[in-house]
Image (tube, rainbow, N blue to C red; front, side, top):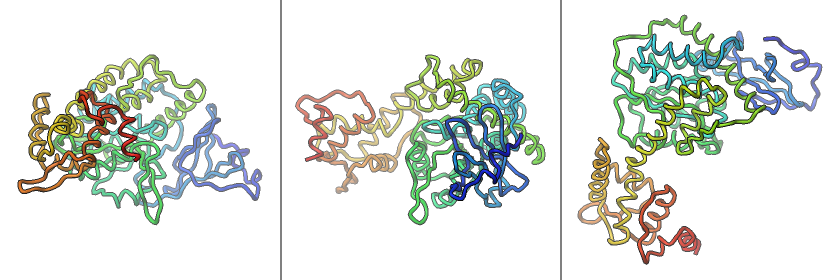
Length: 439
């Protein structure tokens, strides 16, 4: 890629020019991205204006000098960055080629290979969609997950393959790089799963060290081992099950490095072209909004400029919308509110054991295969904020004013269609609840 002295020359500097460390910037007239250099710990920057690429250790824009962050050696060794820009292949062909890699090297069925490819593509736009899609992978063999992550890491944006994570470990990672996290941890604690889910929305930050906050809105793929309980991930995700196979990834580290060099350059071109097209022509959904599913919306955003890919992924995304509806009917966080609705209007209290029995009955009638324990239901109630008390026979939920108002508030928040009870002031409408809470 050609360098342009007018953009990088020290002769254009002024003493009052600001100096900014960045892993990427999006301007109205171009984009800055990280690219590799001869020094693994000191990447270069590339500026792209839709027509040409400028590569340099520092790039000056609008009286500001931008330079890449210095990487920790352990990060620099494993994080793959593009070393050039390859615009020689269409996005449709790139998608087909990557899907074929998963089919050839890991014996994945065609549709499954396309889903993984679509997620991998989404990592290059994780900073511009409201909520980066999460990939959840189940399967009996960890070796298969390791092979999958090695191949996924070749084409994903700034991938880090991790295990043994907890909150403290993630706080120590350079999240400013916007890495794609490939987490191989079947025993991931449920509390950690909830945190990863909750922080996956733009504007939600996680407390860091020394009074700082961190932005964890990044792409995440998580290997969960054998199929987890439905409550293991509280929210939308792309769920795939790795089929058993005798095959192993037939690529050594040198071959993987060559493959990564090729894919990184092509996916960088995809990202820059997508941002340029979006800036020039806006975003058209072609009549496909997928309003019921934020996951489907984010995945569709990746292909919305490519009619050939829209045709391929639309059936799958429509299936995601239907899957959202099914999961919602089986979501214990919502079913428990259905269970509490009538008792909240008729009884003084209900035991957690009885709540569990009623919840499991509803889930079973709807075809759900999982049975929840009283302990799990207790954690769900606690997560919702219900005050539980212990009596001689165990924990109970008393339908006091606070708990009853909370039931109504949550039912409205989640949009559950439950019948109003005549004479109930809390059922009268949200204005009544707000008025009571503000007194």
